[in-house]
Amino acid sequence: MLDISRRTAFDDDLNMFRDQVRKFFAKELEPNLDRWEEDGLVDRKFWLAAGEAGILCPTIPEEYGGLGLDFRYNAVIDEELSYLGSSAGITLQSDITAEYMLNYGSEEQKTHYLPKMISGEIITAIAMTEPGAGSDLQGIRTTARRDGNHYVINGSKTYITNGQNCDMVIVVAKTNPELGGKGTSLILVDAGTPGFTKGRNLDKIGQNSADTSEMFFEDCRVPITNCLGAENQGFVYLMSQLPQERLSIAVSAMGGAQRAFDEAVKFVKDRKAFGKTIADFQNTRFVLADLKSKLQVGWAHLDVCLKKHIAGELDAYEGAAAKLWHTELQWEICDAALQLHGGAGYMNEYPIARLWRDARVQRIYGGTSEIMKELIGRSV
View 1 (tube, rainbow, N blue to C red):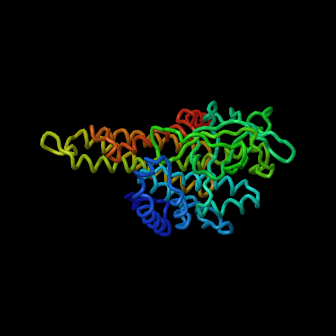
View 2: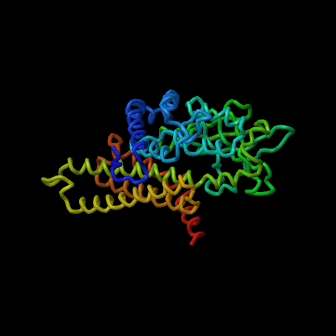
View 3: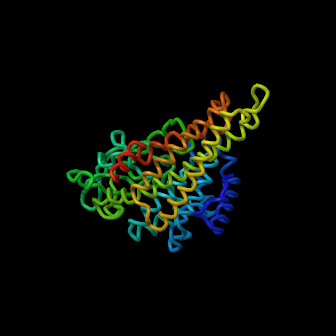
């Protein structure tokens, strides 16, 4: 269980909310984790249960059926989810797609989608990445051409989280290719729309229960009113939301890192070699001391970032720095924790194996570590 006794970004109300989240996950998530990993996706009934428990989209205002809370409540859910070793896509819905809808959607779009996103009846995804365009969002090739009062969408997307389960996807497409990145728009496409097909559930190294898909659009027609926000403003919207998206990844990274450390401590105190526990060796104590110190710094920095974000003060460079530092720390701790397990760490029956596998992609999606360094470098 995460130790929150020294956290500075939370209060009694948030701690009570965390207790509710823990009870919900203990009942609805933990018994199903292994099965979801084997199935390659999370049951839809879990989404509905999460909605009923108030676990989805807590920042959405009450007028749309939400709780009207701040992002720290999302962070509580993210931390607890990642600490359990789950890659359920509810964080994408709560931290990313719901915010796009709230900030840029028309009143008609918000009243149609948000209540059902909050209840879990509608699962959403956002389709940015393409086979030839990842971190460079200006390089996307999917187009949405006007034809009367419709867009005609053509192109393909890949590595899309919630791709199999989604009922609606926010598609990043060029509505004016001649303008480059400035001609990008966000288009809402409902599952079942003619011309929109979901490809295979991709076979990944880790995060197996996070359904991740290819998507194909072939003369897919949607009304002009499906444009999210203003036409050709998509790139601006994407850049505006990146600090929260990257902070969300940083939050999850800390939860996963802490769990990996805790698993290592438990293992080395129990496992014996040469007549004493592995924890009795000086090398083990030094490794754990180093990791514990970095975790202490990490949690303190995360709380600072959370406070700045809810105050509207976390900028793009700080969001990038948070993602870079915390995901790199997660990988360092997961790898060291697996090493302390010895051969047992390579066995899937031990939680550290899943934590290690799932951590690897954190340094890639949401912008690679190399891109984060490039962005941060621009602020120097």
